[in-house]
Structure formats: structure tokens, C-alpha cells
Amino acid sequence: MGTGSAPEADPRAAVARAIDRREKREIRHRWRVAAVLAAAVFVADQITKSIIRGTMVLGEDIPVIPDVFAITRVRNEGIAFSLFPGRQGLIATLTIVALGVIALALMRLVGRNTWIAAGAGLLFGGSLGNLVDRLLHGGVTDFLDLTRWPAFNIADIGITCGAVLVVFGLLRDADRDPET
Image (cartoon, rainbow, N blue to C red; front, side, top):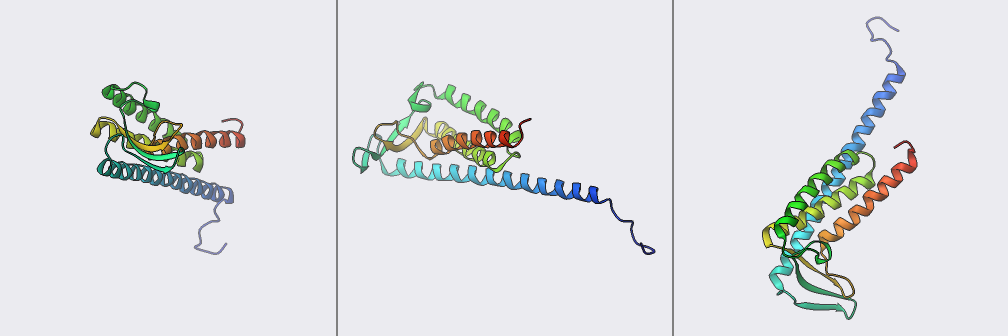
């Protein structure tokens, strides 16, 4: 060691700091993934619903693949599969509460892995998209119609795929660390 130079840093402390910096970068990246996917689902959902509302009347049906898939404008005043129709105030309140609970739970989970972050973004963006529809239009605009399944929309796809990804991410995380 020469004169005037700083003493050598502890290599273990330097490694610990590097690991800490890397983990913080990964967590920031996961939050960006969640935010980008939430925004993408929300915007795609709102644009497609706006196009459907602006170009089709309620009940109008455009067959795409006969007896399999159609674009059908439906207004869902209930929740999933049109359950509890006509209770928009209650459903909107429950949705807001659910969004808050989901947001709090996912805030703790997003940092775990990218699968959970992606799922959280899809889930949040889709839930927000349907909530905005309920508040502004008195019901959710559904239009993707598999003839043997209730009509749905982009937000519903985001919610479903997001829930699957969160579960997958949690299972994957548990496989790596049996103590979590």
C-alpha cells in the first residue's frame, strides 16, 4: 500500500454491496414490467371498447368464424359471467376494494420475480379497465364472443392471464426457496 492511498476495502463487503445493487436493479425492472403491462392492457382495453361502442349497437353480431367466434357487442352489468346484474354501485365498490387489496398484496410480491410482476401488471390493468367501464358507462362492454362461452374483453384476458402468471410465479418462487 502506497502513501496517501485509501486502505483496501473488505472484499466481502464489496460483494455484498454489488449483490444489493443488482437486487435493487432487478426489483426496479420488475416494477417497470408491471407498470408497462398494466398501462398496455388498460389502453388496449379502453381503445377496443371505444371502437366497439362507436361502431356497433348493443346485440349486434359480426361472425368471424361461423359457430366458433364472433364480435358481439354486449353490456355486462354484472361481474364475471354476468353474475349480480344491476348492482353497479356494489360491484364498483367491491372492485375498488379488490383493486386496493390486490395492489397491497402485489406490492409485496412484485419484487420476487418477473412472472409475478408481469401477472400483477396484467391483473391491475385489466381490473382498472373494467372499473372505468362500470363507472363511466354503467356496465362493462364485452365483445369477444366464443359462441359456447360468455362474451369477454381485453381487460378480462388481462385479469385471467395475470392471475395465472401470479400463481405460476408464486409456485416457481416456492420451488426455488422452500422456506417462503
